Image (cartoon, rainbow, N blue to C red; front, side, top):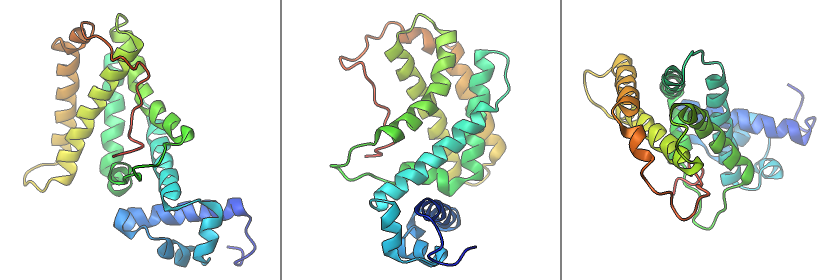
Amino acid sequence: MARRGHHTLEQIKNMVLVAAEDLVVDGGLAQLRVRNIAVKIGYTVGSIYMVFDSMNDLILHIKGRTLDAITEQMDQAECSSPEQCLEALAGVYIHYASENLNLWSMVFEHRMPEDAEIPEWYQKKVDNLYGKFEAHFALIAPELSYTQRRQTALAFLGGVHGICVFMLTTQLGGLNKNDLEESVILLIRRFIHDGWMGSMSGIAPPKQANVRLAIAASR
């Protein structure tokens, strides 16, 4: 590594992100302190605030990288039908959550300040994740409106996420990764085949059609 002071601002920014992610991986969100980051990269606290506006700004960037990592893995999923694709995407999600528990948890543990606005660049990353599921619901149930597809994707991923939270963070004896995977597959198949999808077509969309999916806020 070059000596302190021999890095560009872009290099320092990347160093901060990598160090911050390492801290989260090792100890969770509680370990993510600006002084801890400064020690890891050999720079001052002030240097960190040269490349990030605030700790919330830094955390949003880490969360954004986590969402990107999940969606990039979803892009590699192999499947031959919309139903199989939903299972494959859900499989990627639970695999990432189980293998990267602290990073995955941080996306939902961190709470934005009440008066903070969600940056557009971050919202796009959130939308991209939901969009992976939404595209397949459009093929399974083309009669659904755009807003109904969004609501369906939100409900679907919410169910998958809920099982992950229960299985990965609840201290219950006798549960293992196979239980997690089988529970998610059961949820998916019942979701698609037990009439839930069809019932969505009879639900009127909300007055505000622009649904903002708020992994970002976690408020």
